[in-house]
Amino acid sequence: MKTLFNNYLNTFKGLSREVWWLALITLINRAGTMVIPFLSIYLTEDLQLSLSNVAWIMTSFGLGSAIGTWLGGKLTDKIGYYQIMVASLLLSGFLFIALQYLKTFTSLCIGIFMLMIIADLFKPAMFVALSAYSKPENKTRSVTLIRLAINLGFSAGPAIGGLIITMLGYGGLFWVDGITCILATLVLINVLNPKNTIIRDEIKIEHPESAYKDKAFLIFFLALVFFGVIFLQYFSIMPLFYRSVHCLSELQVGLLLGFNGFFIFLFEMPLIKWLEDSKYNKVNLILFGAALTGLSFIVLNLTEWSGVLIVGMVLMTVGEMIAFPFANAFAMERAKKGNQGEYMALYVMAFSIAGIFGFNAGLQIVGKIGFDNTWSIMTALAILCVMLLIILKNYLKKQR
Image (cartoon, rainbow, N blue to C red):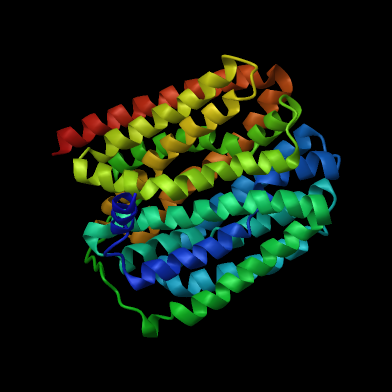
């Protein structure tokens, strides 16, 4: 047991102080985004909005995210990652608090759209900062540490969120979201000021290439959009499925979603270290992760037994654990030849665009043809994602 524990700790060795601080800031921030998994339930049950209206509100969420990510990449290349991270965290904290006072369909569309523009300025800036603070050989593990922080936040967030809803109602969630963003800003200002940090991989490019002219990256981008659509269903229509079909309480929904983050916290870093040492190709690993995620939807149609929800969550979680770190590492590797902010913005935008179409389409499809048919459609999208990754793998072979 002691040997296992020591081996687990060894997988974290060699990561820089700045990466650890960035992970802590991300943890504080993500623990406070506990309102996101409950947003569809809040809108339908607390505000009594129709599924169609909720679908359009979630589209505003995705559209704001896409614009914020694109703008964040541009501003990061022009102004710098530190300034963008500080502004994004601080302003989004106040906007989260204000969001609870919006009750109408129109005001919620506008409010969530503006919130996501500001909040998602942070993502490309954070990834560029992560690349700068990491030695080249540690980048995949550095990404994995950030993901551990995100998922530890998400594992604690929904569980605590379920308790807060039970005791204080949804208003308490918005206050916690806002306050944690502001706390994360204060930590960032104190520990990651450029005057006190060490840059470990500064990339200076004389004639940077545009990410939009990199054919391999565009194929990768399209595959990520499909992967993002199916992945996001776990945080949009899946809570409704748990609630309406399997009759889980809000606390049970929170615990099941929290299991995803806790499982990742325990097993992702050792898994990534083992996969890195095994020298598997990054694209092959992303492909395998996407296939497992698709399989997680297939099992939901096999039985009405509620235990299958755990099986589906485990398959999705392992798929996510493999696909995301190596997809992120692939993006950072390609970014070395061009504008880093632009590359990382395009990487994050794949999931924002997935949010624009995925949230709306998922809810609309469920409303029209039910959950079972929706899971079949998500499986088909997973197959398309895998096919695109096979095309990418063959294209990269030809390039070499």
